[in-house]
Amino acid sequence: MSAAQAPSSTSPAVRLEELSDSDFEEEIIGTAMSDHLEYLHRVAPPLRDLLETDTSKAQDETLEAILPFLEGNPNEFDLNSHHLPKLQRKKHVAFLEKTLGNYPAQMAPMDAARPWFLYWSLQGLTALGEDVSKYQERVIYTFAAAQHPMGGYGGGHGQLPHLAATYAAVLSLVIVGGAEAYDSINRKAMWHYLGNMKQADGGFTMSPGGEEDIRGAFCAMVILSLLDLPLELPPDAPSRAHGHTSFMDNLGGWVSRCQNYEGGISAAPGNEAHGAYAFCGLGCLSIMGSPTETLNKYLDMPLLIHWLSSRQCAPEGGFSGRTNKLVDGCYSHWIGSCWALVEAASGKTGLWNRSALGRYILAAAQFKKGGLVDKPGKRPDAYHSCYNLAGLSATQRVYTFDEAMNGNVGKGHLGAPYHWEEKGLYEEDKAWDEGDLVDRVHPVFIVPWGKAEECRSHFEGKGVV
Ligand SMILES: [Zn+2]
Image 1: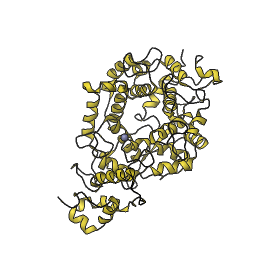
Image 2: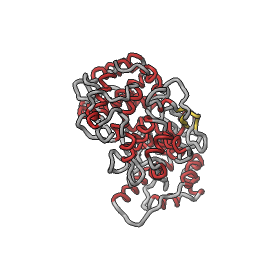
Image 3: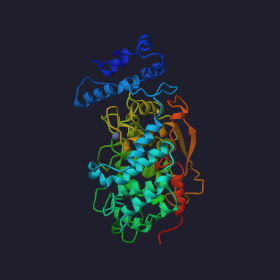
Image 4: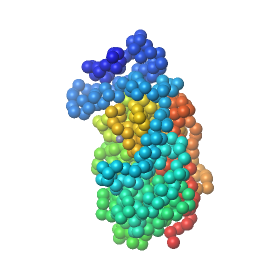
């Protein structure tokens, strides 16, 4: 066993220092990897205090487990011209096709999450360039059975609807696309269902009488916008009793109160800031209007940017979801996809290290047999595959918001998300080759480029008679 592969008894930061000897590098690793190591040497080790805690130990152990993947190629993948593992496209496609198949009996407790498995797998496949139209009929059939007569979707036939399942169902139908898929959605019942979720304080619950959090606000805005439902609350909406007439009433202020003292966004006012809730909050505001207007109006942007920047781990390159937490591949999206929205609102670019995130995904988040993972040592799943790939797409592509709101789709209310443009590929210090490119992903809806516009234009101006 070479020294580079041997478990080290010293701290990871010291190990990085040790590796700065270029003779050592070439002797042990070979010239093929030296470019990549050169990059690692440029990464400043994190500031550390001397107090050892469970958290600091977990961080050291995690870095110890990840470093071999950043320094070398334990999975023996083919390398790209930047000496990083190539995107293992075929293996990931095979993995995601399997996750769309039948499930073993032990998955029964996950039944309520079934719409998510479809969404993650379909979105992951399209990100890899696969045509998913062959799944159209099955997706329509599955969700026709899972749609509740009172509106919204449950995990399967006979289950009560839930806004998370409804969000995943609608996005899955948008991904496979086509009039039959769109028209399978009972929009009028959906409008009433969403009206039931609107709360007196401006937020939304996830189910009638259920938890009120920022997922509810985001999911409701996504569905109202994609299906071009009226902004006016249905006559039977309970929050009408509190003076509300619109789904938007008090919503911006409610999202604003979810930004906590750290600058990140939490599930509900007063809670801990979290990466996934940050994306939900920014996504919600970016549907309510132009991000330039809404993000600057409702959020402390410098504080938000500080918190988002602090999520990028060094030298891992990937993101953590919360303060003092570990790097995790799913935040490649939850944090990584926040940047397009923040850059549009702030007018600033270069706020995050795209190359470092790309390196983490390619080197550390690809499972040897296919599928993507949280971190080395974890098993792959559709969730981490979908969101690592969405994050990789975010590192590779530059999106801008068209403030003039030109275009044929999205002229009515909640039309802002149809005004994004792709400005090409990010080329500076890139970590990928053409073969590692992931397809374009809509920066707010996280569906394939063009699919949200197709759905919206199908419904635009149709009302809910
Ligand atoms: Zn994760």
